[in-house]
Amino acid sequence: MLTFSEIAAMQACPSDWRKAGERIALVPTMGNLHAGHLALVERAKQLAERVVVTIFINPMQFDRKEDLDAYPQTLDEDSEQLQQLGVDLLFAPEASTIYSESLDTTTQIHVPLITERLEGASRSGHFTGVATIVCKLFNLVQPEIAIFGEKDYQQLLVIRKMVADLDIPVQIESVPTVREKDGLAMSSRNGYLTRAEREIAPHLYKTLLFLQEELSLNNAKISELEHKGIEMLRKSGFKPDYLEVCQSDTLQPAKPEDTSLVILAAAWLGKARLIDNLSVNLKPGA
Image 1 (cartoon, rainbow, N blue to C red):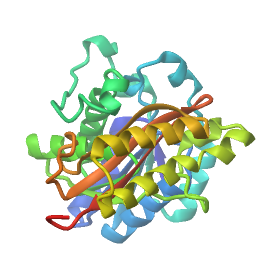
Image 2: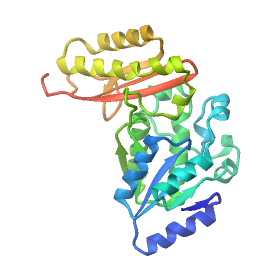
Image 3: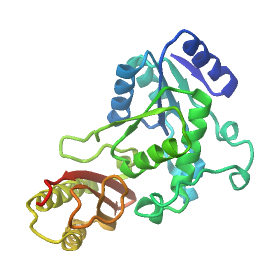
């Protein structure tokens, strides 16, 4: 596996691969890799002859400096895992390499509407940071395909919209959420959980499963189910941030006649802010 931290050296390889007619798949990450990330890499290997993984802890998408400073940096361990999977190239630049100026004076990409609710409302500027770094990585690597996880459902939709609106020639592929045996969605932030909190954490997924079942059976109004879900989280020991049933393609609040839905939730458990989602597909008229 080739490893680069500088842009010019990294770009030579994808350029040679494209000349040879080889497709390139990109997997952007912030490192601290777990099985969920590795599933993205495995999918990338199925879709392209060459796989590029980026590890970059993007300062632009953090709304709190303490979160940025506390984010785990495990480059050596991550690199070993990627090499074992047969990744072709790892690009792990410094922040000064990606942002030559201060963030305040750097051009930024804002995707309207879909970024203004849920995670966007809770984390000011987060999706502007996500859209900007993903667009920069697309420009630097120029992949044919990019792979993202469905755990970050809103992020996935933001990237799809950015690619469509800006006519970026990259095919966006998604991979279902990878979970622990007890249902907890795999996340780098799970490492913040204490042993006692780790026992509570799967209740987030169990709450979503309950709402999914209730929606499928049409047992209550959406607003009533949202309220019930928030109360379930509180009783389990969470501090809920949001729990909403949304239209799956726009993330606008779901209406009674909608059939393609997604339940999205974010909740604090100690120092960890956990997010999760579940899709719900109803039969018309249900």
